[in-house]
Length: 234
Image (cartoon, rainbow, N blue to C red):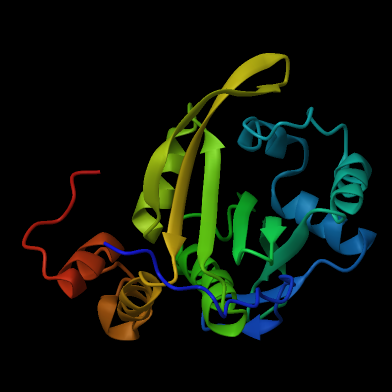
């Protein structure tokens, strides 16, 4: 297959966190220390260190240390807050990272969901809204996800959301005094219409029964859109 002609490619604008209202979650940029402290509390306070054990930074002593880290990271991060649509309570975060507007590439990472958000439609919708911003509002070509190769939860989440596994960078970095092999995933602009359609079908109210349980899995909807006959085994 011939490479796509990108003679007229002009690059993209740098990624910033959108302010957008979904059905299950609202997304907005982190603005100040008080919001970081609310986020720290939503993540469980010091208990969040266990959840974030695969992050390369050391454990946080308290909410102020967490804010110091987030504030310093804004030179390379853009922190998105996930907010409850009814009461405005902060429920979690994700971060745009490694932004490369010249080549139309950005990573989503440092993702953390509090108990109010974890394993709910809000967590899926939040990722959909951030990906939609990347592809539809900024015109990016590539959206990345990477994680510690021992982080099985993150690896399953990447596949569920529609990212494609690309391989493992062996001995990628030294993290917390140990070797880290890093698993890489991506989705690209040509894949986004099908991925977006599956997100929208999954989030449709008709996909949930009276107890709020999903009728069809996100993976099944995506494969159905692609004409596949059987769901994946992961």
